[in-house]
Image (cartoon, rainbow, N blue to C red; front, side, top):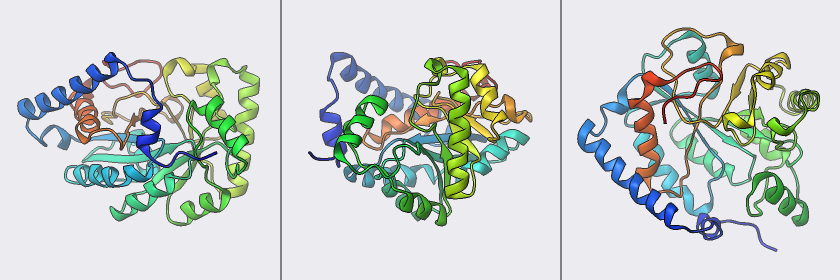
Length: 295
């Protein structure tokens, strides 16, 4: 009974297919094309707000994550999650801004915090209170398998959460137990939101931001989004790719944040391709639900 410590272990458990191999080769080729046709950094310097999120920083992802931040720091200004949300709401994008967040509350997120702090950056860690402090292997394995579709990995405990907050990071809500909102009756979702916010207020003294699990548009609804703001949250985040141009102010309860997933275990070129692509297609972005930017 061992917890997953390395991305190589995690990756080895994922099904391999010709499609995934072709996708990897295509991403490398597309990244090279972007650099050759559009210059190495010009596109990245376009003013916008780019939200990036991760799920894990395993031990063998620490150096690649540092390398990714080093690359991004050449062309972007790192801001807190709350500051990024503020800039989107008021329509202020004088620089190319990046903010970071993380979903699910795995203990290896502490690696991410340590590396972010080297660059003067912080993150918003979206947690599921029901998994915080789980210590019995059987419970951890069950939660990871049934809720996260993930091999068993250790979770943060409340001392970790409070420590992250003390170091300047933010703590956000991700439902009590990583539920699929689209499959949950709205009354149950409302109760879950209220309970999540109560726990965070009690433990952390703040509960400003919410990200719904699984993150695609079909995992959520306009009705559910209204419940998030009715519960008292200041922002609602998806896991749909895109960036925010901040072309005009937007009402809080109309804003659905777009976040790009980064996987430090991927080649640097693959993560950078999506970030460059977002900058290039920024004119297609929409802040409000339910429009989807071009893919």
